[in-house]
Image 1 (spheres, helix red, strand yellow):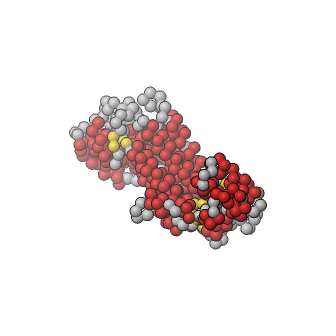
Image 2 (image 1 turned 60 degrees about the vertical axis):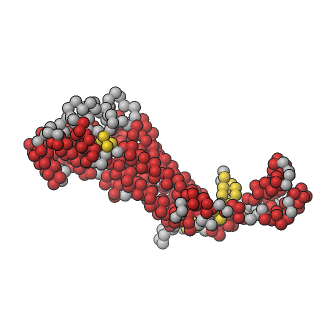
Length: 436
């Protein structure tokens, strides 16, 4: 991922330095495991670990060896042998390259998931705070982009909180899905390495042994992981799209924070654009696009091929780095979001009371009219208001059928927003719990 959309902690997970350090930890743990069961000298295991832990791996040297060998793991092992000396003959015994590569990828994906869950936690905190701030701020709800009925802006944010709470649970499940190690040899049969070594490596790295591998860890695990990232990205886009719509000039109910000295347009000095939300929409598309190749990686030939390798070298860092950046940006956007309750009220009033049409229709039906007749009465009074001719309550008062069915005080009471916000506390209790 380009530096513009990279945060240091997540990017560091995918650096060559981190990758080679994890490779060493896998090799050292495997040798420790072999020494533990008497398959390798304990002194050799001790020296390899001691010398490797003190070493700074020379990336340029490893790259130079790889240019000759055309094999990244062999290049690393050759450089490691230069560091640890004769004891290197015990390193990588019975392992295959995929044991190292796949177990390393598991470690990296687990670490990335931990950062992503922390990102979601920060976003949830921002959403919870702002939801409570605007719990009772009435605004218009929209369906198809058209005014529907009143809701509150706090409910909009509570909806997002619940969505990202689900996202966190999905990320945790995805983390568990990929948290497996495979140290099982050439085609996964443990022909040249004891299964106890795999158990030792997995335990040392905070993983669990893969129940059955071939030469690789099954890629349906990774497909689920990247699909989850795509779903989280879609939730980001949903909230970003909501903010973009609400910031439109004709709506202007919310606005991204515009810092002193910030410029909105090179041509038009007045512009204040929803650039963060638009950026998040683009990043979501990018992350989501990486789910499909991860799914296509599931169908490898026989016990393995490397068609998945090039895909994962790109999507693993790029998807996690981009999503990390997007979640962090969204949390900041929500934290600093400017909200205009007066505009919300003005928009609520724009249709002259039409947003209360359902309440009137139901009251007519309760008076004894059929639902179809009630609908027709309300609609014939609503359409002139829609066209800018009068207000809804006045027209209803002048309608003889309405007057016969609903006393005027009761009719006026139907234009109160009270019923629309009567259950806000109950919904908040469902979303945030007793302490919410």
